[in-house]
Image (cartoon, rainbow, N blue to C red):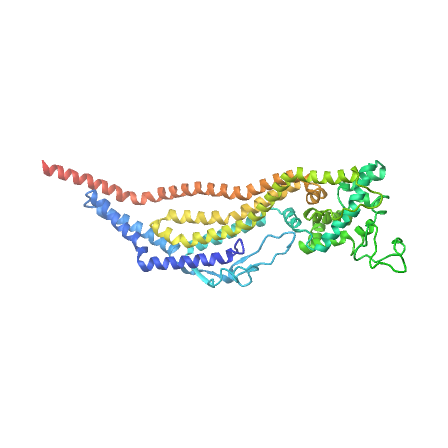
Length: 520
């Protein structure tokens, strides 16, 4: 039998184990027999109060037999755990939905739970638990319906997994963080200041902006600064960079007879070089902090050029761990004029202006991620509670048929939440695809969040409402249906008891007539 979460592998077993314990207590104390005693008393009291005599007693006995039979039927199907429908740990399994990070997820079982459940918590579950035939059938049917519907729904690109992984990609290595800050101070700020001062309006600039976007000059790996002369190809850091070998051709300011340990690369080399370049290190760091993040970009946007794919990874990491001003020294040919000051000031002001939306969007994203992780656990715990408390419901309902149907609907309702969450995910992914038909624009959500945070906030609000609202709507609809079903079953069974009621009333009328005649 398939379940819907890692936790449910164990809560299902524990829930029915608790059911057996509670049922045994009710049997030992004799509480399970009280409903039968109530049936006997009711069917004796009502005719007696009506003064029934004669053939009415046989009809009353028939009513008692019918109610006893239905009660015994409920006990057999939905009360007493049966050995013919055991819930075996070996037959329970859970297969997660494939994601970008796990295209072929491993099926979890009680023996190999693929989680800490069963090893560090929820340990000691029984290998086999007897379950009443009715409830076992309800669980099996619910699971079958759930998985059939999920398999039947169309698949869609898993953009949310990319978003979650993108938020994890950051700079954990303090040495790389310092190097990025040095590049920011000694390469990007001077290049951007020069660009802002010159404001070149040439065909070469227009061509680069057409390919890489109008915001290309706003980040460290800008192709404007890398591909055009006068920027990264001529700028160099003001001190040697660790890891870059000395070059007598390039580092002419040093004495070749006593060269320094490290050299001063051009900013274009410092950024682009494979292995030791800043961008290559950022891509490697992204994979280290968010497993396989660079490959996710390739999977999500295989048609993009590798240059854009690497840029997307680097920009995402820089957005999550922005560089800081690492030096107050000014490079050659620059002074503390308005260009540099205005550039730094505009960056700070832009960050403060968008801070409210950025913060709200981030909080919603974190909240949604927490909700998605929590909901299956809540579902599993609720099912455990339902299973454990069912014996009391069965007894207190006096073994009614309507209780069986309403209880089955309650279990089906909770288990069907899995389908609703998959539907919510499907709608969410399609909303993302609709709002970002260009995958390059979608990648820029994380590379340049200020441009898209309002839209991300809207999407996260809609998604959260779907994940929470659909189960609430469904549960309300099933509550309406449950009340209707209960009334329908009561109406269907009432004719069985109607002859006894009528005979009681007739007997009461006859008794009154006899008493009246005797008084006369």
